[in-house]
Length: 77
Image (cartoon, rainbow, N blue to C red):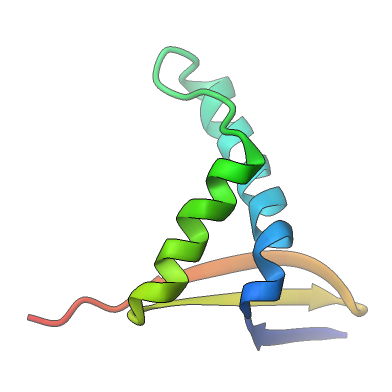
């Protein structure tokens, strides 16, 4: 079963792990442009996004196991 829920600050370590997977894909494709970020640095950035109020994180689970995430940034003009 697939479920999707809104992320909370307690999910930051999970989100940082998922982000590491994405960064590895970027790094492998463009090693001159991307590097391996430190998990604590990623958590710090994600925390600052949570605090902005215009950013949401959504986590997808497959059979009750986290499987992916989405970052939604709302920009008003």
